[in-house]
Image (cartoon, rainbow, N blue to C red; front, side, top):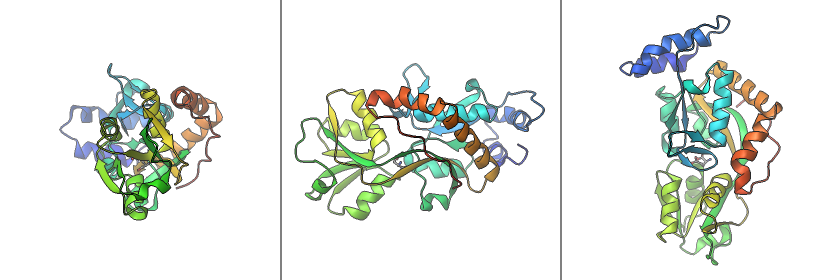
Length: 278
Ligand code: GLU
């Protein structure tokens, strides 16, 4: 992968980091053909606090559908799981982390949008979901997006598509923007806000984590296509990741990962989306 810019750029940016020392080897390993040494690490951005999708567990392991997709793709690129370094990538920082070369790619409930495509490129999509609402289990006055008009306090995350949609289409809602959805969930638990809004798969993960505490209300009111974010116009990496996703969908690993991670949250396994050029 000689023209694989994320590595060389990260090498420049993070030249003082110990990991940088190993990076030239990763170029050799990734260059293909030679096999050779695989000392280099790959740095992948994901969420650390989204159960079922991207979680850093108390024992230091990582789990979730995004983690499994990221791990499968890394393997196809020549990186075994022990060569992966996961870097927390909050919604508002994803483009910057990619642009600065601090991550090689991002698998973090990251919707493909035209605005983001100005700054980064995407492989995928590898999952389709939609914006929804999570309320306390005993809430009766929020039943869907149409109940939001009456000065409801809603929590979402800075830099996310759901927060943007609320600002654009529900101007009377009192939107509180936090850095993470887990912070929104805490605010919902302690009554500081009335509802959390983001993608249905994310909300389902939190609902499953605290059985009986929350419920999802109404129908999804957007379409979110999750992509793997990478450096803008790195078509070589984009093609390699698309090939890996296509393989993951075809060989049953995609379905198995969905069932393992999102099945417990009660989400029926959909057909995997067609991988397109983004
Ligand atoms: N998929 C949406 C987005 O990319 C919401 C989830 C998130 O913030 O990670 O903004």
